[in-house]
Length: 351
Ligand SMILES: [Zn+2]
Image 1 (cartoon, rainbow, N blue to C red):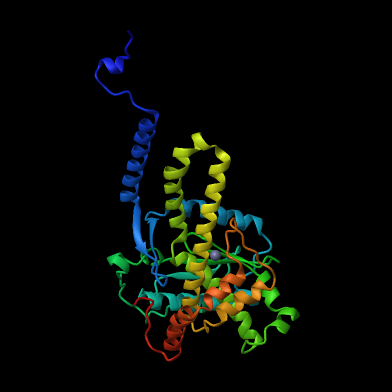
Image 2 (cartoon, helix red, strand yellow):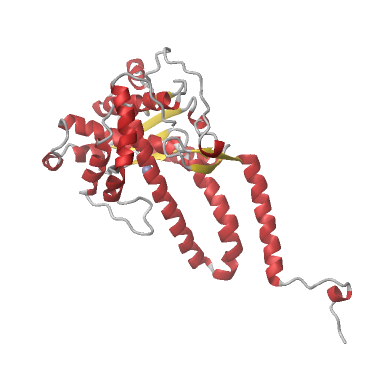
């Protein structure tokens, strides 16, 4: 009779499942150690959602720095100057949004904000318009605790260098890159200023106010991505999905089903991030002194130019975004801040 060497040593032969589980547990163990060293559990201001992010956000900063430099090359000759009419208008609105945000977070105004210029130009007067810090608003940083005693994630925006690249393009969109960098395409302004828009928008106080609201809605949404630390969360999400889904099942299930499942998960979570940035953006608009009721109106207006949603969409449809922003609870939360700002009273994004 023949016995295996393991059996003769008195050991149970290891089943393929046990071997698989052992390898997985080891991977999860390494991941937990990584998270304990490099991860940070935080609460997102305004939405109060608890999330796990990479505390040393070097990866997303590195990749987005490369993208930012690529955009500089790609849009050479199409980047509008900070002193152009659009640059001055967007710069002023950015300044108001950031001032309101740092006030609402109880943080010092030690940030810097500018409209990116490919040429070195002397624009001291412009810097003053963007950066409202006049040295009078020095507030001690308040690191506040949120749900379950977990700290609000605000440290990453302290001392941040916010920069907007204004691109002359038909594209009506904006994009947040890590580390305070925003790419803003002027197509949305052209669209908002069109005769067709003038006919559609009848509720705005004035058409000028509507165009400002379009810029404020779009910019505050992108700043909202920055405040919610979505990029750092995305990298942490990628790590967990790899450890829990890709690595264990890729060999057994194949690339296509795993790829589809990953696309579905990423798209679903991306849509949730977009809605969260909308919510934060509406609060930032209010803090900047813009009527937050404009936010759902602008999304509704944008939906008229077409925006579909399916399971693989990274963004919800503008129609759904408008409906969610128009919910009573969300409007009330933003209007409370807006009324305090208009009355010159102190306000806070924390409960
Ligand atoms: Zn977004």
